[in-house]
Length: 92
Image 1 (cartoon, rainbow, N blue to C red):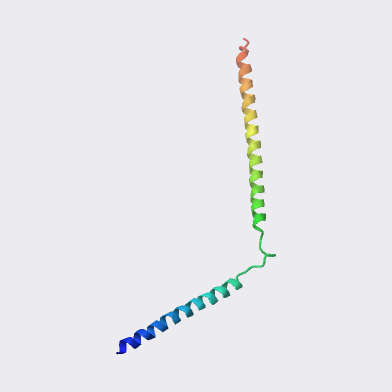
Image 2: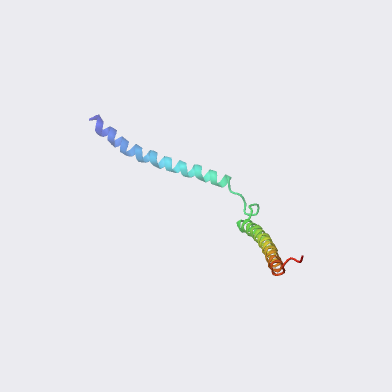
């Protein structure tokens, strides 16, 4: 008859331990969260970082567009020069 009393004790003890475990996890999580919160005034703004990133990307695009424009202009001048040189035979 010892088995029914052990089972009845386990039915009470297991849920009790589970509830205690969940409560302690919740308390530990709450204490960690409250200690790691950074006030909004001292946190860098996410939008500010995104704006700075987009500003740098725009500067890089402007620089690349200028370089491509310069390169295209140089190639066109070389082509025009070559075309003009082919039109006039060398004078001897």
